[in-house]
Length: 333
Image 1 (cartoon, helix red, strand yellow):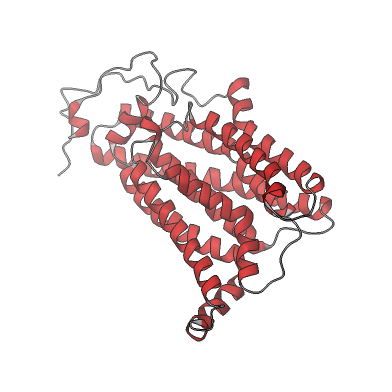
Image 2: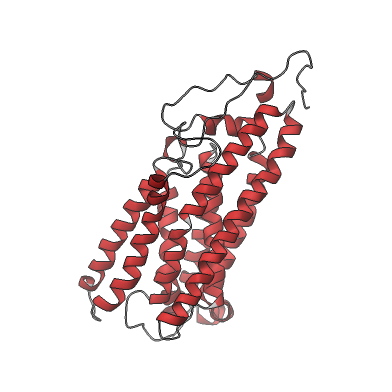
């Protein structure tokens, strides 16, 4: 039952703490250092997409993967720098296993398509990772900036809504449109980046544009990771980790079926599934796995992020900063 606050006892003045612990204004303004930090993953991916395909010799064995491993370490370090502070910082570091699931999902986006195609009977590619896959990964890495901006604006506006609400129902009704707007803003920014990656690949990679299925899979992956991080920032890391784990399981199952269907003992039973995966394509597999997980996560996030306690936790997630005014206990009961 909703408990409205007494009219004789108005809410005390609430000054929201910006995401990141009060370092900077709460209106979503962006400093040069912060903007530069969120451009680092995209810059690292862009450098890898330009340098690696032309410099790594075609060959076999683990030696050919060393440059890609070095690039992976650099990209992971840049991404960790973006997640350690600011609006994408999660209290307590997030859920155990979340980094492993994220690594799997990003790895499937880069190499899973070629691996799935080979298991389904396609010829082995000449290089470990295609240039189009690295271009898509660059678009996803550049989306870290819009994700941070959307998360920051959502936290600031939700905190303002918390300060002027007179009860839980009024607060929830005001926050749900803010969550939808933040998700839509990130989705539009991600779509623009993927469209730019498609055009760039068509002009610079000898006409090898990114297939539509791969673009759809990357868009679904980006939305899934954004929602999972937004929930972790507001104190619900388990939901995002579970959704990412479900997407990982679906992709792993697709790879397992593609590999097992070549065995004579199980080939007749798995042939229809293998044909379906072949028709769906690697991008379709990723779009189905990540898209279904993102839809389920969005439905849950719309419910849990409408709780006032989620935004009280987010306000104190960052490093020590100016203290906020105490919130009324009635708003969290």
